[in-house]
Image 1 (cartoon, rainbow, N blue to C red):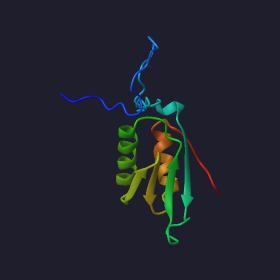
Image 2 (cartoon, rainbow, N blue to C red):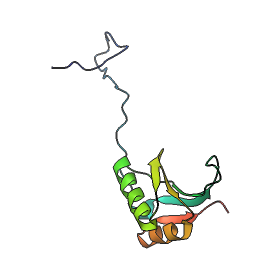
Image 3 (spheres, rainbow, N blue to C red):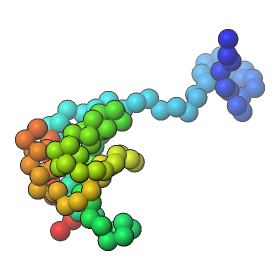
Image 4 (cartoon, rainbow, N blue to C red):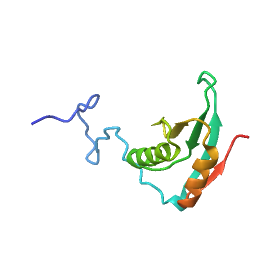
Length: 112
């Protein structure tokens, strides 16, 4: 039987005290029609290589990873999902934008 980690709290005299472990609850994924996605081309700090960047996804990490995997498969390219953003290697803005709009996402091209 393991004890819960309660670092910093020893004792409280407040009868209504509840311990906050600091772990945030997983965000619920919004339906595609309520998502505000931005599709842009990015070259900053990537050695001059172009990547398609999709930002603005609101939801769980599992849903973000699933959408990122689908987009990478669609483009036939590598990429990653981190910090709430999907990076797809190469310039696939039009293909990604058309796919997202066809699936019901509110997506628009951003950044020139």
